[in-house]
Image (cartoon, rainbow, N blue to C red):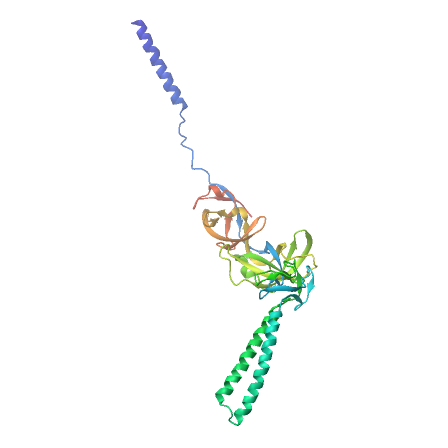
Length: 349
C-alpha cells in the first residue's frame, strides 16, 4: 500500500511540472503592441522630357530591277549571246530561235498578198464601169485583208524568236547551251540592275506613322564596316496581319559596288525627338497577362493604373497613355503593395 501511494505522489508531481513548463512556454499578450508600421517606398514624379527614338531592324538588299530571261515561244536555239557576268544594254540580242519555217511562211503570204492586191486593183477598175458587183469587190478586199493579218501574225512570231535584254543590267549564269530546244518555261539566264540597289525592311505597327517618303535611313552590310544611306521611296499599302508590321522600301544612295543583291543589312532609323514624351523608370512598370500597370501615390494610398507603353532605352520606358505630368508613381516595393494600401514616401526623384 505504501508503494502504491508513493507512485501516485510521483505521478501528481510530474503532472504539475509538465503543466508549469507548458504555461511557461506560452507568450503573454502585450497590451502596448500596436498595428504594423506603414511601409516606406521610393517614388518618381512624372514630367515631360525630350526623347529621341532609335530603331534597329534587319533588311534585305535588292536589285533595282531583276528578272529571269525566258523565250516567248518554243524552238531551237541557233544563237546565244548570254555572256555570264557581262553588262548589257537594253534591247541587246541575247538569243535567237530557229525561224526558217516562219520566214518561208512569210514569203508565201507576201506572194499571195501581191497577187490578191493586183486582183483587187482590177476589180476596183471594173467596179467603176459596173463590170463586177460590189459584193465581188468586197470579197476580194476581204481576202487581201486576211492575208495582211496573217502576215502580221508571222512577223510577230519572228520578233518573238529574238530574245533581247528588257533593261540595262548584268547577266547572271547561263542555263542553256546553243542548239538546245527551249520552251517558255526554260530559263536562259537572269539579269539584274546592280548599279542601282534597293533595300526592303519591316517596321513595327507603332512606327508606321513615323516613316515617310523621302526620309533617310542608314544601314550596314555583313562584312563591310562602311555606313550606307538610303532614302524611303515607298511603303506597303497595308500591314502584315501575322506580325502587324509594315514593309518599307528605300533606294540606296551611296552604292560603291561592294553591295550585292540578296545581302543582309542592319538598318538604323533615328526618328525626330519628341519634346513632350513621358518617360518613367522601367522598374515602375508592372507587367500583367493582358496589360501593364503602374502604382500611383495618391493622398497616402496606392492606386493601380493601366498604361500603354512605347519605346524603351536602357533604363526608361515611354508611356503613351495612362499617366499625366505631375503624377507620382511608386518605384520600389511594388510586389508587396495592394490597392488602397497606405504607404509613406521616403524619397521622391
